[in-house]
Length: 327
Image (cartoon, rainbow, N blue to C red; front, side, top):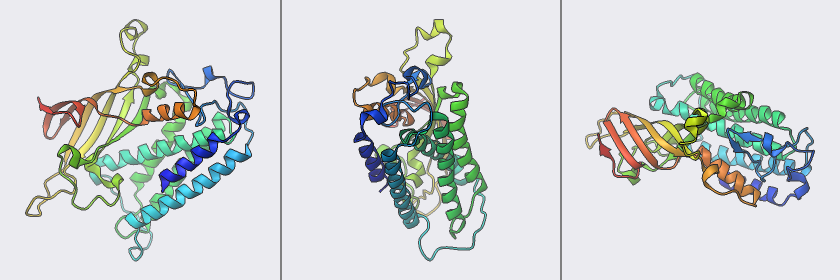
């Protein structure tokens, strides 16, 4: 449902007149000043934001309709998975700091960060200047995640988790901080998801109501733009498209053996080479394509990775798909 809503928003933006989305005249931020790390940054339609806020009717209506559909669709989806009718309770607080060995908290940070980023990008299309869009987007991203936390507070199985709420704040705050402190743009949260069954990992017995509950298949990363951090002399020898990521994942979560005994969760600390897709994929004349190649930098695809964890040290060339060699 949420994917359909996002597609609807993008489709409406593609129909907007060029005068509303162009970034090359005095109404808009010059492309040289609209950047992320050392890359040219793009709005959804491939332009730049306005220098001063001036709301535009068509994209604002599209945003309102699209976000309403997105939120309603997500609510229905999550209600069926997490908040079934008849399973409600009085609002209560239930701290779950160790839930999923902390991986869940990284998920909250990442989700809040990406939601804030997307809302900010859409608000720029609506006519907000970059600063206004950033602060409003961060607020909207955090507000949505807090709505989810409050709903959890009324669920018998869950409860309002203060650590989840703090993680939601960190994700939105980091998005805002990257605007205030450009150096932080060299460190980007990323996410990877490969079903555990595809790579021979144990599959959870109960926690696959929706894919984001499948912790055995999920890894969260922080990608580092190495080229920007090296001294000029050294950077000349480092491919500008090559990044480095550190990640964290778990295995055997909610997995039991043939006798029903929990197998035992193992942690995985990951270190791998990564890619800057804006550097690799050529710039397109179609604005939304440039935005999509930019969005790829929030996902970590398989690559050379060293795993250090409870099961020892392993290396995979296209981790986790490669033949993994214990070291």
